[in-house]
Image 1 (cartoon, rainbow, N blue to C red):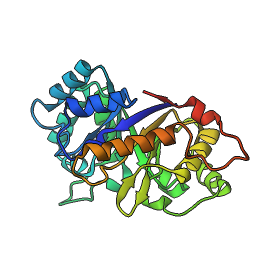
Image 2 (image 1 turned 135 degrees about the vertical axis):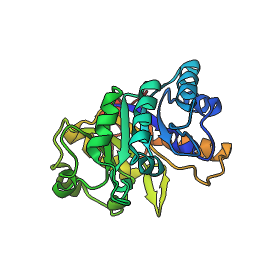
Image 3 (image 1 turned 180 degrees about the horizontal axis):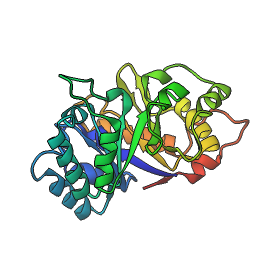
Length: 265
């Protein structure tokens, strides 16, 4: 299972070479680009080319792109949706992700269909993966079968403490090949904090039962000011989680096949 770092962590400023170098220096040579107006406006003229060249020059991979709420809202315009497809192809994105609860509401009769976003991504050679925190059958029926599923551990529906049996009950609705990724963070009110012991247990069970191929560390800037000290603290937390230090007690067992299978990039 490969691990990516979402550039959501750096969303206080426009994505630049400093952010990419910081992530690579701290063990993340692969990124998920976070598309939001302030951080990465993929619909702005010249921006897809700038980011493509930046990623290439810094020697990292950025083949995942997360469409934030503001971008999804703009994609209700067919012309903007076409520009988005061109941007995805320009940046050589392979996976487009979006959160189901961020889906724009119908406005003046216009709405963005999941099938439209899927077609736009596939036209650019990318796959669409939808983040969900609810894995019940009713929620999953909203997602057409050709769309991948990412389990968002920082979603509001996962605010309660769960034991293994309850986690297994959640996962039984998802076919093994359909759980494409796990999105890791710990929800504090509306803030995505670094994952901890609770998320370690959720990840272990997801890996044991459904073997997702990708783990995305998707954490907010702790203060929103783009502080180097804050970034360093987040990286320390992610490294602790990534090495298995946050695992719940297992009768003295300090290993675990899920942690052995984790690899940056």
